[in-house]
Image 1 (spheres, rainbow, N blue to C red):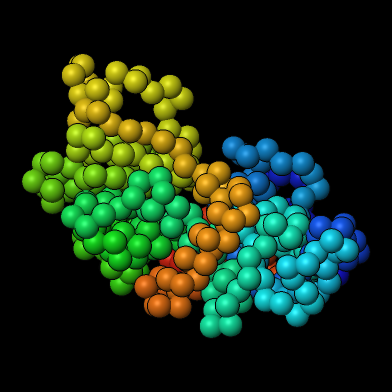
Image 2: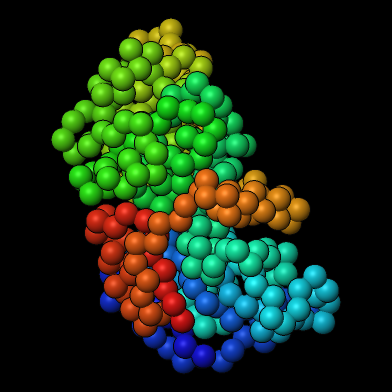
Length: 331
């Protein structure tokens, strides 16, 4: 089968198409014939060799959707021909076939396309967990979504609006502003042209927002913290610009010390994978995400679909920060 692999860290050019054997199944495994593969920024970080160490050589990828080709001896829940998807699993996913443990798979309803599943499951699960479990967004909340035109950002905007919040989205360009506004953002801040903290405080009559969802990190963390109201929540789920402060003085969360923030604040790093480790939780969250898609309350914006052998171009698109929505690879 064809796969994309890298054996050293570096730029997108280290991604090479290789011919390898189709994986052999263990008793609890399923062989998935991938139909669409999601490309995520963490794939770029794995390739770069940055914050997330990985063993080499590596076939990257953390999500895909496809058709069950074969099942292991102990697998009873699935059979050949079933439509499935998986997310948050690194099993050699930039490939025509992937061996996936059965408890990492979720069924894909007939009304959801493979492109929607691969383009929306990982980021949909992340957005659902962030807005319903990490900080349950409710009617009347003010929500700040950093990088609101990114894959997760667009979904956070949609879900926060669906749950009754007023949403402020930060973006870097006019085209991304259009995408975030189309997703439902009430207010857009071009952080490349204006101070987003000042804009947030102006919009909220100097009260600040209830929650900040931030996957940017270093360049936004401090001002994001200053944009919170008392008892606000900073929810970090990524760091595309580099890590935030290595050590955060907990006293700054109090609101009563010099140079502190609003007060009684909560800061958390939230990984969706920690909320869906149990297969029952994964199935429940995936079902909720697919139901939201089917009801058109969560729309998947596919920015680009490329053949598998153009994986390097897919990575360059993500690194350019000029793409709004999801990039897919099609085997």
